[in-house]
Image 1 (cartoon, rainbow, N blue to C red):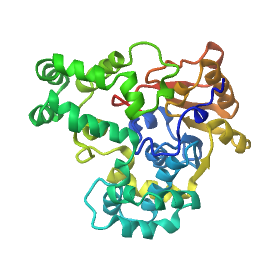
Image 2: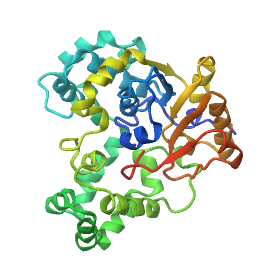
Image 3: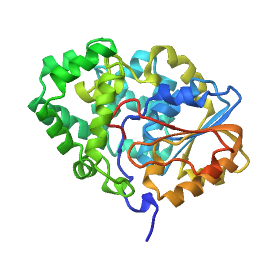
Length: 350
């Protein structure tokens, strides 16, 4: 039986129009070195661009999906050719007069595959590319049709209001954590519904146990322990956009550093193993691997770990997310490389 995720799930669509993993957590764990080389799963490109803010020598962005690489490539073109406010307008955070006209300006900076992808989807450009992923559509359904069944605008405003942790816990217990809330959450964020509408059923092949219950526990953590008023991922889920809280790569103080670092960014079509093989002469200082190990068997995961360790400098850092399938390194790998499995900064996460 073929065990490669690229042969079991579709990757010809924008699955994630945003990275649903906290870049602040990533950067804290990675500790970017100015002279360092880094390998990053591209996804939508957000966190790969955030790596550039640390002024590394090189960032190689790899992805098995041409659509996801096109998301990063178009973000790169936007940063190269637009000022900060124009970037926000074009991507979809702000209203824009004519995104199609702006795209024609940017398209000359794209690779041929990326340009072909976006030319085939002009409606994505008009909508704003941060809104066009399957996962974003899943949250749109939740926000428009499911959440209003149990919580209105007043509850949402109260949840997002700045509060200390004690006040957040009190609000959650008194106003948010109702029986109907728990019921619709367990239904909508079940393995079946999420697999069909949000992710892909194959992404759950190695996940055991009750997915909805585990996500509900993480949601409680995100709504009580973590601040809610400045969580960009939570804001997008509940409101449909980023406004008062921005992902790291879109904060104004990061714009110039990312723009100046774009010449150090290399896009690679293929998986992590293929990227390592294509760059055999590089010893990496760090790896941003998203949650790709969840899509692998444990044996395949261990094989990848060994390949990564062999391609790492002494003291290299490997950062990845465990969302539902625990992927803790075996004992023989731990002394060789400081492996850091990070928790998502907001849940549910992709």
